[in-house]
Image 1 (cartoon, helix red, strand yellow):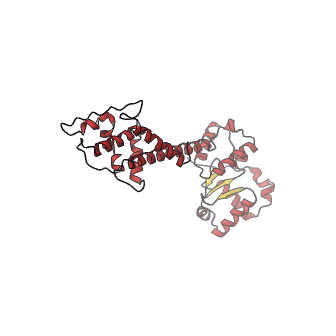
Image 2 (cartoon, one colour):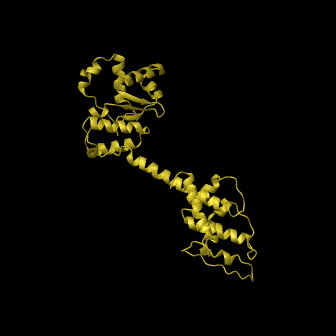
Image 3 (cartoon, one colour):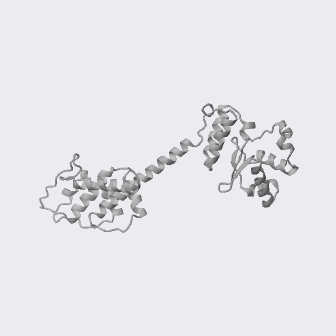
Length: 285
């Protein structure tokens, strides 16, 4: 579908335009009609593209961009290579659901959040009610970012607490949490609860160190967090009975959902305290 940019005939009689040099008029028209323009007036425009399409060299491009920034007509953001034409919506606003839907999509792709704030201010300045326009303006995107960050923080806290709980069993003393450990724990937390992973560590440590059990392989923390090993060491798998030596009389108390342990409740409470300490260490409650 072809794209067109309309220019009002009053453009040539505008007081600002009348005072521009021929070069500046040409460049101003270019900024409003080039191949990268959008309906919201915010778009990515690398200087290399400007050079190619206008025929100007880099020095002239930099000079003209700075000049129109000084005039208060544009903002150019070097890190994202995005430009905003400040009075764009004043002359190009179309209050139709289809166009507004397009603007919302365009704003969602804007990389510089400051542009979104300016866009909102311009809508107010030119009398376009934000509620009527119903444009996201980045709030939903910011909420998604915060939600993602909170999820990552929670995963870090759980990984740290489980890691410390594993170390407390004196199986293998790792020096730090590694990438494979984080990956394994995050994957298991999708299928198991935090309490079940504590169960798996407790039961594995009991089986490993008990004289009445035959399992003697020392798992690293990452290996223990593999699905196949978590599955066979959680309480539902009855590992204390399944790994008992033949003829051994192991009367293990079942998992108590009220105390959260095999009998005394100490293991779960200890792990719970470790998670609380991890939260405090990261400054979260």
